[in-house]
Image 1: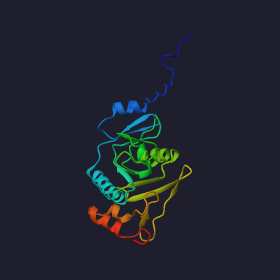
Image 2: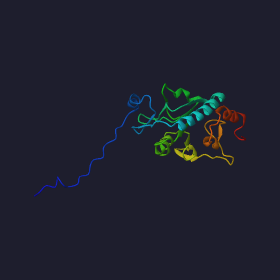
Image 3: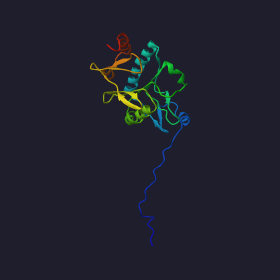
Length: 213
């Protein structure tokens, strides 16, 4: 009887994904932005100038507003949100309420931020719109903004018992945050063809009541 070991098709095993704990993640990732999701590390590709300029725009406006109103702290993308020992994403922008600042450590917040903002960059569309969105919902992040510069779309969600519900943009194109009291913005500002002056935008927000901008 002739053996068919040399000719019979053999199905290969599916290789197991390498899984990391948060401490292993921190020891391996130092300068580059990365995310730890379900024990898997996702390394960010180098950000475009457009992406960095836009994130800076958001951080300046939101951080300045939060400081002016003494509401808490706004941090950028190199601070991890440690949700479990195998889940520690690094959102582009986070807001933490004043009452929860005790959860901040030197490089992370222990638990969900009050607001997470992601700006889609090349290669991050599924990560931001599916994986992180599900993760933030399940761990109780109250509010999530997802901004897509290439498609000129902005999505705003509020967490209701682990499920995201769309937050409204009114007829004038104004969005109002539910987690940053009094903060609002005009969605068209996010996609303006020319860079807007952050101080002018901030002054406009501070000078107008959110219910009647």
